[in-house]
Image 1 (tube, helix red, strand yellow):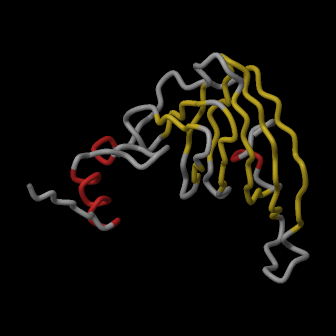
Image 2: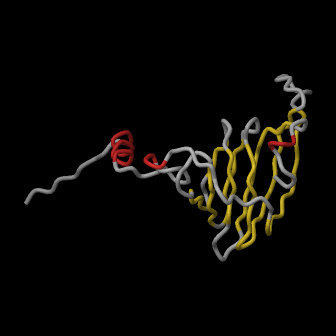
Image 3: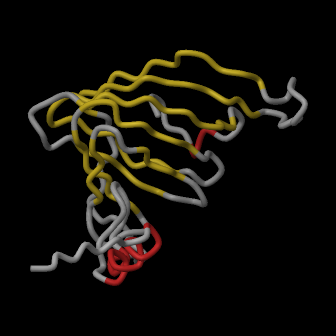
Length: 159
């Protein structure tokens, strides 16, 4: 009896998953990418502890980005907690989920996006969104963003 082993290249696997409509971890499923006005979006923070750990004034660095800081934050969202609606109009960010699971409600996706521990969310190019912890465990995040301190409309207090 002869056994056959199939070896799939990573590119082939990626193509198969894409064809099946499966999303990459923590991203909008391909067939659900669409504008979303986010009716009923949360506007108040609930159960959020947001701590700025450090920042760098980018106007003083070689990149010369006046009025911008690269900052690093730690955020904890309690069970049932909400990070209210906010914009990334000019504030790109990377968010690492260290513990727990949390749903993102995005202006660019027709369905909620589940982010799990170990995943990194990318927020850029005008994303507007809010997040909710529907689980029973606190969610622990590490966040890095480039913030425009002169444009508070894109950064609510505690965001």
